[in-house]
Image 1 (cartoon, rainbow, N blue to C red):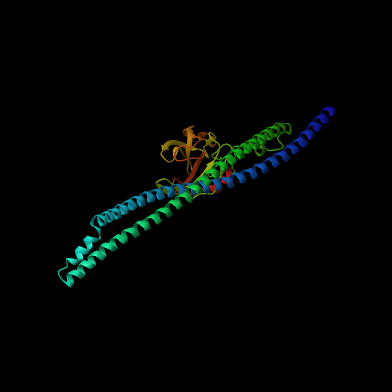
Image 2: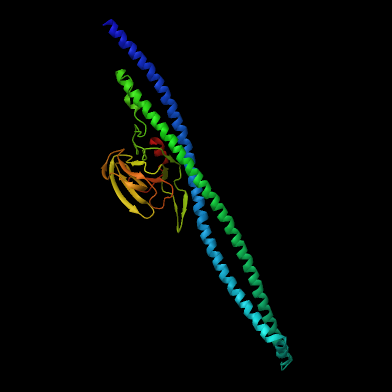
Length: 343
């Protein structure tokens, strides 16, 4: 018995040593994930700003092209009028003007006729000036368009590069998550040997974080690599309309599960801008998640149940879900502080 007790004690001590090593590795992995999450959130903010600038320039390009078309029509009209005046002057020749003046019946009539000819000459001068001014306007608009198109192309290159960077960082984050899950799994098996000396909750698998508090969110809405920024209230420009952002965009690889952030009732819907959308109503309010690639569970759901998958439906161009929080089912408020608690 004494030998057996010594063996058991030795095994427990070895398990404790190994658990301490694993805990150090877990701490290092969690610190790495924190750094990755901060970098991803910073990148998400930059990507959102670049996308907004790109959308604004795209709208300005459309307006400038319409302005150029209008200026070209005006220029054609002025040139037609000027050409017609020149044609009439050529057909009449200088003799007709002289004959017109010599036909005056009195000095007063002569004065009137001189004023008429001067008005005709001024009209021609005004037309010529109008043509010149319209040409200058047209050249400025074309130069502005060239600058905008160059900036638009530059932003598009930046957006593509940032999206590639985002995908690479998501992959790195996923590897870190997988490593953390493996470490926690090994630690959990050691906890069994240590007779429950460590609470299992401290070593729960990564990916679904439960908050010991009143909520309102108990689970991160995106169950996988993600990045988000505080963009509530920012002005977003879209073709034909502009609006203030009513939530936070959570970026994630296409097809990543979207889960219910609390117990409640999930309702699916579809809109031209929101795309595939799910609203989960719970005890404290409603959460709205948009732009899904496909739906998941509906009806009564528990926190963590898959209700959809990351996509680009609606007016989305980058895979993400637009997340809104409506306390008590009322107006949307900034969900960023609550996302920080669970994501």
